[in-house]
Image 1 (cartoon, rainbow, N blue to C red):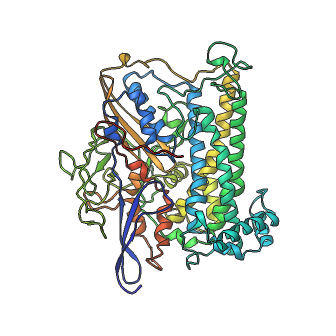
Image 2: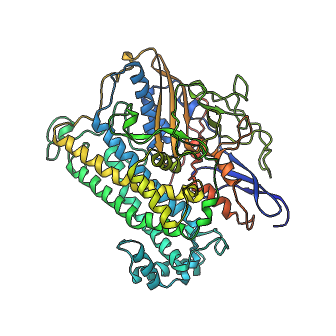
Image 3: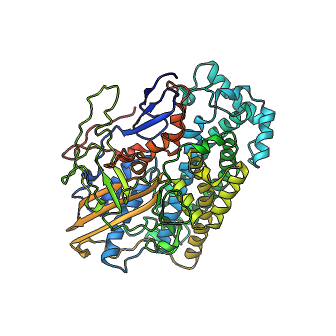
Length: 596
C-alpha cells in the first residue's frame, strides 16, 4: 500500500447478522480510523409494547437464533425482578436456579466451541496448507498436546484426503472464499491439519451437547421458559406415565424430567468437559503460540463491564454469583467498581450516530427504563460506496457506563474473575500466560479475547458438574419444585412496576429492562452485548469497542484481503441480529418461507 484509502468490508462474514466495517488507512496501511455499522433496523421494543409481560420471553428469545436461550432468560428475569422489587419475598425455587445455571453454562460452552472452530479459527488456520502436512507428524503434535482419542496417523490421513478431494474438485464449500496463502497465516501444515480435523469433530460434538437444552426446555433452539422458574416438572415415579400429574409422566419420551433424562444431562456434561479439556483449550493455546504478536493488537481502551451471573443462593444474592458483577477501568485490575442499575447517570444509551431520534434531543443519553425507540433513518440510499461517518451511520445505539464505552464479553468476565481472585480462573490465566510467555497486559488484545473464551469454557464446564450434583441431591431429598406459582396472575401485581433482567450471555452482559403498567408492557428496552461492543461513536465522539480495537496497532497487508480486520472483529463473536428486528405496524406477518 502506498496511499491512504478507505477500506470497506460489507458484509462481515462468519457472524450472526449484518455488519459493515469501514476503515481509513494511512499510506503504510495502518488503520487510523474505523467505523462499525449495523445495517438492519432494530425494533423488538416496539413489538413488545402492550403485551403480557409473561409472554415477552417468547418474543424476545427470537431476537437471535445463535444464543438460543439468553434473551428468554433475560426476559423472564426482568419480570421476576419487577415482582421481587414490589414483593421482596418473591423468589425462585433452588431447582429452577440450578437448571437455569446448567442451561446458561451449556450455552456458553457450546457457543464458544462453535465460535472458535467454525467462525474464528479460519482467521488463523490455513485450510489449504493442511494438504502439505505429514499425518504422522500431525498425530505426534496432537498427542503432545493432550490425550484426545482421535489422534492417530490414520485419522489425520483420512481428514487430509477429504480436504484434498474438496480442493481438487473446486468444492471447498464451508472453507470457500477465504484468503488462503495470505502471509499473515503462520501455522505449520501439521497444526493446520489438526485444527481442520477438530473443526469437523466439533460439528458432530455440537449435535450431541444441545440435548441438554431440549431435555430441560423441551426443544432447541429456543427452549421453553416460564416466569417464576422453569417448565421442567420432575418425575419421581418410574414407569410409563400411568399416574395423574406431571410427577408420574416420566420416561424416554415423556413430558417430565426423570432419571433417564438426567443421565443424558450427565453424559452431556462429561462430553463438554472432555472436548474442552482435550481439544478446545489445547488447540487455542497451541495456535496462540504462533500469533503472540496479536497480544499487542486490538485493545479497546481497557474498560470492561460484567453484570455477573450463575447464582448459588438465588438471583438477588449477587455475592453468590460465580461470575462477579462490576466494572474495570483503564486496565486497572486492582479496583473493581460497583454498578448501580437504578442510577440514571450510569447505564445510558446514546443515538448521536445511530438512526433513531430522542424527544429530548439526540445529544442526551437515556437510562433504559426511560429508553425510546423511534426509528429515524437519515443515511444514504443504497447502493452507496461509503457511509457519511460525520453523520449518523448505524442502526445500533451506543451504550455507555458513566459516559464511558465498555467492552463486554468473555474477556470482561475472565478479567473480573481474575481481579476478584477466583482461584481456578487465576490458575488458568497465569498458566496460559506462562505457557505463552506473555505478560498480563497481553490479555487486553485480540489474542486475549480469543483465549478468554477457552479459559471461561473450562471454568463453566467444570462448574456444571457441581450444579448437576446439587440438583440430584435436592431431588433425592424430596425437593422437586421448579416453579413458584405465587403472583403468577397479574391481578396480584401492583399497577406499576419495573425491573431488569440481567445475565451474562456468551457475547457479554445482557440486560432487558421492563416497565409494566396495569399488567401490560409500557416500555421495554434490550441492551445487548453486541450493542455495547459494536455500537458507533457517542455524543463525545468516543469510538465503540469494535472501532477502538481496530484503531489499535492494525496494519493491513492487502486491503482486498482484510484478514486483519476479520481477526479482531471475529474475536468479539458479533451477533448483529441481537441488535436488529422489524415487524409490520399492525403486527401482521410480513413474509412466509416454505421449504420443499
